[in-house]
Image (cartoon, rainbow, N blue to C red; front, side, top):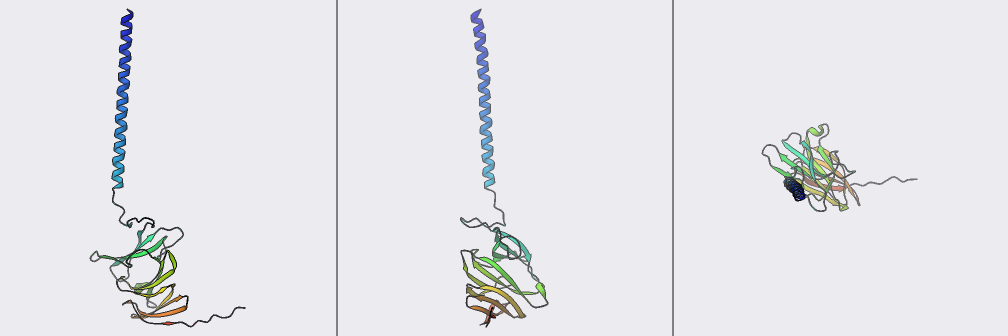
Length: 224
């Protein structure tokens, strides 16, 4: 009688152990499956194509994004800024961030090109050359003030046609763009200053060429 009782107890214990072992195996399978699924989704997400308006990342450099898309008046050309979202700075069109290049897109044939050969400089300001009374509906050209972020004392003034194709550097060094004055469709004056004083460059805004340049004679009044 006692032997039969112990035999029954052993069978019960064996069944409990078998059930527990089966539960452990099921839990292990669920855990492994969950890990594999998570890894699969993680790998898939990491392989997704980057956003088309974000430039490829470069070590030690800020992320650059295309923004401020706008049509150039009287053309089928779209221009957009490539800028970094730096805190406390503003783009040349009023948004947050610093512009580092300008993209031009021809909507007629889909071609595109950049104003600058690289995006290492900051565009700290720009001016549109337009005849008085015509506003920005009839622009003639653009002038950009470019600054080296690593050396703010190194800057340049770039003259460009509206499409960013014809370009010429008016001045470089420690220069600051002050004002532009359009005199005719083929002549404008660019006023800028450097450590030596103020200068006036007479340019052809349509061809983006400098005609001549002179210095301004400015004497400051005395202070008491």
